[in-house]
Structures are given as structure tokens and as C-alpha cells.
Length: 192
Image (spheres, rainbow, N blue to C red):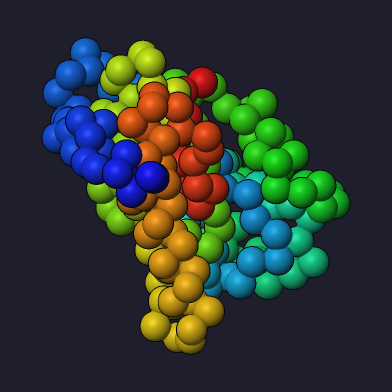
């Protein structure tokens, strides 16, 4: 039954642009991180820094008590030079949700984009997600997810397939009823 209801909808196919906004909404990007590989984290943050979005963008990297903080220090220092980046160093691991909350409490943007620390964003992700939020009835939207290592093993292929099913079938079916139950954690934007 779900496949029947996941046929393309106006919500999923709408070609929206930023032209509908008098002023582009500000976006706060929250990136919780725990024991992330420095290279992976740097790629994630660089993809955020390279977003093609004309509105105000603030990034909150929350190091959730990482045990490899010394190895991460060069990444933290490099991105701290960018005035859009705020580095929060939690003294101990409190978990992803509490790390996100720590950043949300410090932020003030119109919208909050949650991004996992191993997620690499295409340069147009924010530019494409923000117009989805023009409708006041829409409280959240998510990006299309693809596993970067999808060809490495059968497990990574399954994970990629699960992402595709979640984005293109499951959430589309829920949208037909006007109630998406949850957005995927690696890339989801919310109205404040």
C-alpha cells in the first residue's frame, strides 16, 4: 500500500526557488561530533562552508567530549577562523541530542539544519531546502541521502538502499497524508 501513496506529489516535485522570500531566512547549521575522523569532519565542514546560499549562515560544531580532541584540534582551529563557524567543546560526552540542544540554545537563526559530522553536503543543499519551508504548514524538510561508500560492501549497499527507500518511498508516502513522522538525521532542516 505504501508504494501506491508514494507516487510523486506536489511536495516532492515542486520546483521552488528563493525568489518567494522578501528576505532570505537565516539558517543555523548544527553539527554534533563525537570521535569523528579529522579528515571526515573537515570534509563535512568544508561542504557546509561552500554552500551557495545568500542568506545568513551560522555553523555550530559541537564536539561532544571526543577522546581524539587533540587530533581534531587542527580542524577546529581551521574552521574557527571563519566568522560563520562556532566551535563548542563539551567537557564530556552527553550524546547526540543533548549536543544538538547545546548548539540550538546558542543559536538564533530562523531555521535549524541538523547535519551529521560524516555527511558531505552538495553545494546547493541549503538553497534547495529553504524554499521547501516557505509554506508555514511545513515544519521540516530533509535532503536526499546517498551513502558515499555504497559500493564498498553488501552492508554499505544495503544502507544506501535504506536511505533511498526512506527518502523516496517512505517519507513520500507519509507526505501524501500530510504528516511525515521523522526526517533522516544526517540532513534535515526545521523551522525554529
